[in-house]
Image 1 (cartoon, rainbow, N blue to C red):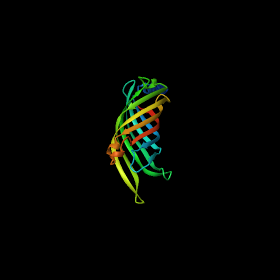
Image 2 (cartoon, one colour):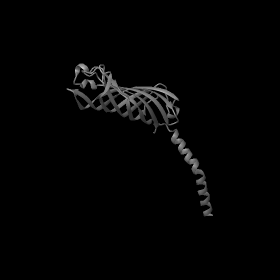
Image 3 (spheres, one colour):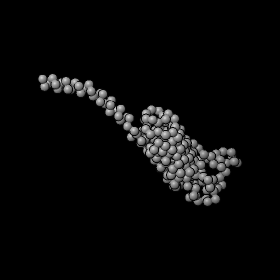
Image 4 (tube, rainbow, N blue to C red):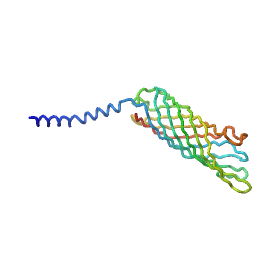
Length: 223
């Protein structure tokens, strides 16, 4: 009799287990998630400050990679922390020779905190709109390492520079909802830096040394 009761109990548990797991997964999915992870891939360019004895500079598109964590604070407000890597290169254009020759190349490393404001409010990650727009302005710190070429008396020399400064990121993006926990965004970014303030040529350092990017961003709500 006792064996029969144990068998009935075990059989009932086996039958009930799938329903219990389904209920737990439903509760886990329905629980509001306010933390998301982001991966960005794109292309960017660098707008260098004018150089003495240089006719004009030609910017090049180079790859961009960044990782971020975003915390939703309110229905319209989130706070993003992000690290990024951007390669950059420029060429010098000669009006006399009508050609562009490589001038410098390097990579920038950035870390930032950016509050972002989304156009359409939502209080739960499952109630996100299918299409949304956000805008953010933040503050961060940026370091660049570059190799730059100089010609003197028919000889070419390469010098290496390590520079760093605060910067102000400006971000705008169009966000498309993929599913309950995933989004895809197209993002435009501009980094206003203070790198020109450390230039050794004060007469040629105005309105330069800034970065721009166009990125494709994948966002996943994790907690």
